[in-house]
Length: 522
Ligand code: GLN
Image (cartoon, rainbow, N blue to C red; front, side):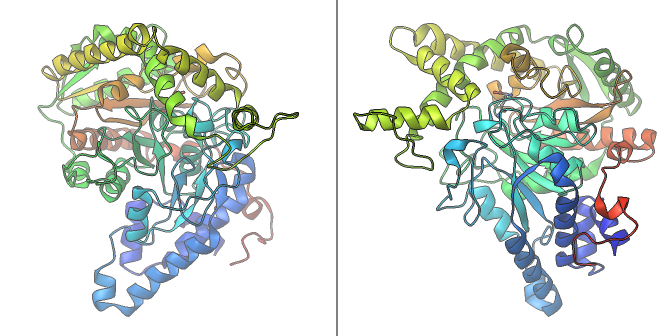
């Protein structure tokens, strides 16, 4: 049984779906294997803030019952029915707490499900639990979580990226085959890069944001976290599509994504290297793996061209005005009256303003406060045009740069992050160094275009995963999956299997001890 469980957690979501459909394995077995893995290793990783054992097993049992009944009940099952998934704790769920990684929401339960969660439920995908994140998705390391940092399964002394480090680490540590993340400036792709997993930020509006606690509404996007490109495509098809509850939701079907991942052909495609997004400031091992991917794509028949997006040098600066401005407005609702925590002032008078002040002082962490102050200042009368207004103009320039670049190339390519995973604590007290980690991911959010990060290999100097990022024009998410799947296949052939197979084994009671007492289901 231990053998089977260890095998089950290592399958991709698409392989699990095939095994479930063929009734080689039950959804309860698959779900239990992942719950046991969480019990075994999450004490070291801290990817999960909440584990949803009972409900996940109940949904899995429903899938098994429908399959056993056969006929219409089995026929109506979604292809991913019974494949478990983890959900970033910024996305609201009925029946489980949602904290956004903040003390201010400790103990709060949402009265409604996010649209993406409704879609997971409709597909009968068991939800394993909620994953850790930087508070209100502000950070690149998960160290700003009020519930302790998540650790990188490749090296427990290093960060798993952020803000969605919990989702990426859960998938990299085989605690879940799939997860949902949110990406405002890179929080799906950068954790993907540093944990050796796949992460996709879809086109703005391709996936409903209804029920994702808003950070910066014009930049936020929910997207898939997985171990294979095909799995990400399958998941985006589940969660995507028009939603009347999100006024920025697109009406395009986005139903050609998995098919694109299965095509596997880049012959004749033009792939553009973004001049400004590699080279100086990027770690040598990151550059080496990036250049290797370029050569492999060329060998596979793609034409490599160089493009220039000169205004990308302003992207980070503009982002750190737009994002805090929108966040300061979005976070005004956490006032001690409507949600979660209420702290009282130490002395009289007990006015509503002072209760709000005491609640926000006690409930928000330093990084969140820093951004609220910055955003409130940037939006204040007299400064609005100079800061927020100018930053929005930069955004238009970035969009034009991308338009020009896409007239020369079908997709663009860059490293996902300038470095591999840094050590916990290394940048925690240096906000600017932390912000710089997102130089390559932020431009896609500024322009609303889709981006995919996939493992590009291990850096020579530290043996840690490097991410390669692909960008496509808005609405052309399918191109990312098509090119990503080709590069993944060539790289895996070179490595002799998935990159994560090279990750060190995590110590588990079940593997380490002679007797197997963990899990209780063996
Ligand atoms: N790391 C970036 C930030 O701190 C991006 C966050 C995100 O995408 N949610 O703002």
